[in-house]
Length: 342
Image (cartoon, rainbow, N blue to C red; front, side, top):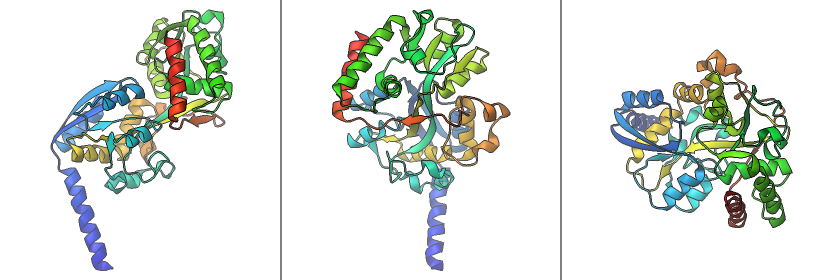
């Protein structure tokens, strides 16, 4: 037993050393404004690895890029409902995240999730919610219901911004109408379609990148928003309020995964391990204002973050995590969105 323990300790030490001594390159493909420069600078300084960053605005964009054969990326960051798709299509590879030294820091709630039950593919990035935000100086409502977003009042005509992809918009619509996620019922999806087509009369833009800017400038008074992104807009001094509607909000969990075509797999594993250190994950959480899956990060939070409403939702908030849709359900969603975009 002692020899086995010694061998295990030696192997762990060698793994830690190999992770600590790295050089070369790392190419990350992540969501827009989702990768703090200071975090990348810290990683580069500690490892000697040169990081390059490219960005996208939706899970659909990421999936299409990988399906089209894009190469050159070592880490991408899909949401939980897209991970099984990437696995089933052979677009990402196993890297044994559970065996990395800092995996011990993962919160039990997020270990071995249903989208990666053996934790072979995914390392944690951030988790949060999707709802809507509004400019409190230009809107009389209180954000208490999804009705305000999907069936807006006349004051919202030409002042509403909606995400430009269907993933979270349709999920929010399901919550509002009381339908299950990934519905295969054509009648239910037709009801969602009719509602979104009518909502379009009030929409000034379908946009997934500059929501806070639009609220701050008054180009929009209400917009789809992610919780942390809403906080960042509020911290600029804009009168932005993130809504917690009574019906509930969409929950999501974004993970780091390694594309099958990655050329710098060991450097990708090094970055995954780096991000499971509470000091580094706290830097990301402080910058982005979303929840994290690493123990001990709270000790490094600022006072502002500890009390920020976007990261401290009401205790009775209903949060619904969307699963991966069946081909039939996804086809209905695509048809709905095609009709809305016409």
